[in-house]
Length: 166
Length: 132
Ligand SMILES: [Mg+2]
Image (cartoon, rainbow over all chains, first blue to last red; front, top):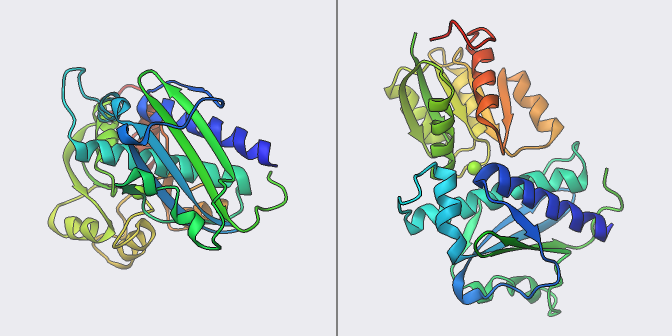
């Protein structure tokens, strides 16, 4: 089950990055975590057959191309920080929306909160550890290399995952 | 006939992507207005003559489902064709949207899907000729 979710996280993330932002990505499962000092983090929480949060961290250097591609800008046109944040939020929103039915099945209904940017990237993985005092273990992690920069995804699940996915 | 479109999505980047797809589609576009949630969308419908509404589901303030319900309750807006563009993957929810008479496009989408779906709901015919 855990392997299956990881595969799904990778394939959904790769597909959405390619189709929405025209960015090719490559799985790099073994590499180190992104350097938080030069990255932007976003998260989206959801509740349904299971409850949790998806966190996405993207290198700052990847943002101009990613955002420009989504907006359909020419190469030399600049994007604002606000546009870049909006692009990351919509990416994680679409990844999450596609991920959940892939894991839990198409009959299930999830309520997904609006995505948000987390300013202090250091804290982004901490809130999940507060609840029972134990460090949070993501149910799944995907590490992707992009043309420029990197992208990490962390899927946190509260409680138990369903037994099987279809 | 030029189609006046209202695009409702909380993401400005997504609205820009949809607008770009509309421009690429070859569809005869009239005025295009934008709104960031369902409430703003209803306000825009009050102000501008609209032939087609493209609406997201997950939005703050008022979500797309409620906006569609309100549109269907009002005589002025109940017959406006609606295309939902959303990440929604639940069959249960999609079935409900269909019952409300909305067409559905899944994110991420291709410009062709947008063009073909709009042609369908606007009854513009299926081929590349004769629509402009
Ligand atoms: Mg949205």
